[in-house]
Image (cartoon, rainbow, N blue to C red; front, side, top):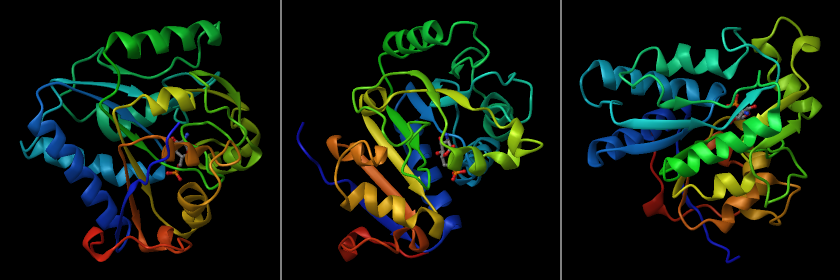
Length: 258
Ligand code: GLP
C-alpha cells in the first residue's frame, strides 16, 4: 500500500483542539445531508462531544440524518453499567442530540458469540455504505480503537485482549482495576482504514511519544496508529503537548494557535 502524509494541525491546548474538532464535524454535518460518523470514546473526546451537544442545543447543527458506528466496547460489561461505552455515549452525546434511535450503533459486548457479533457489525457498516468520517483517539501505547500493539493491519472487527496499560488507563470508569474487563470488541485496523476520512485527536503530554511513533516512526503493528499513514485522507489535530515529540513540525500555514 502507498504511504501518505497525514495533514497535521497543532493548536495551543486541549480546549482549542476540542473547538477545532467540533467545528470540523459541525461543518461536515451542515454541508452534507446524510453522514455516517465513526465515534471514539475516552477523555479526549469528552470536550468534543460537549461542544457538539452545545451546537445542537443552539440550533447550529442537527444529528437527525446522522448514522454512527462506535469503534469498540468492553466484553461482558452491560450497556447500562457506568464503565460501558454505551453508557459513555449516552451520557456525553446520544442522550443530548437529535439522533434517531437505532441509527447509533455500538458493538454489543454482551453478545453470547462475540465472533458472530463482530461479523454482524462489519455487515452493518457495509450495509450503511461505510463510514464517511471516523473520529479516533490514540492510546499512550499507540492503539486505535482497542487495536493493541501487535494488531494485524488486515484485522477486522473482533475480540481482543486488552493490554495491562490500557486496563490501567481505563480504570477510572470502574470501581477498581480488577473490575476492568480483560477483553473488548473493536473495529479492526482494516475496518478503520476503510473509513473515507479520519480525524485523529490527541491531547496532553502522555500522548506525545505515541503520536510521534504514529507519524514519524516505522509503519507496522508495533504502533497500530502508524497504519493511518496508509490512508490518504487523515487529519491529525493535536495540542502542543501532544506534538512535543514530533521532529518535523508542520509548516506554518498548517499551524494555528489558540
Ligand atoms: C481508549 C479507547 C479509544 C480511545 C483511546 C484514548 O481506551 N478504546 O477509542 O481513543 O483509548 O483514550 P483517552 O482519550 O481517554 O486517552
